[in-house]
Image: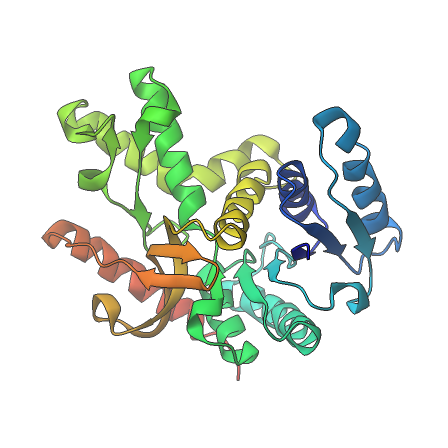
Length: 310
């Protein structure tokens, strides 16, 4: 029986994720959206399908405005939501996306009660927390995509700086998805060599700063939108790790219950992904500087969580 993957939100991130998954033939894909133009999700699904003969995949892709076609999904990726607009406060954004994510979680869990949920909607960690509280699923079945994207950005900048293949670079970023993320410089390597041995402290600091501002840099260049190719691929990698039971260790936002001394919060930490979802939370040893950065990230997330209304 083929796997079934639902992506809620057929915008740029959702459609990019669908294309990434289709090319890997991981299962049937359903793109769900409720846009002003009813045919939009169907049009994007058809467009991706027609890439099949060129790229050599047979994935069946459906576009719909109803959750009826999502019944029995194995994995649901939630990308729907509104971006923060000029004049919109953090509380405004949380309020709008809280309603959207709550409705989506109710809709998908009612027809796919055993699905694993991957949240991409911002503010990421707060929306993962909301989805976990509303879904009624075990904590291993609800997670957020952020750390893979942030780590990929850091790896890209390291590779550019050293003029090496990205395949030689292993970067690791913990914490919240935002300006207070925690790039783990000591655990980031090139061909196994820690980057502090290859770069000056000044260059390492510049890479860390650019990683933290990576999303904003793209927004400033695009002017009318935000990143979607890399976020879509990052979410797709999480789906692949789950459906292929890869036991892949990546950073993801998950509900913590004592790990890293944190409780009742969703936070980006290294996890092992397999068929059961989050199969293990990996605890790494942090030094004083890293712990200080982590504490600041936690404070920021808890502040955003305070805007949720239950």
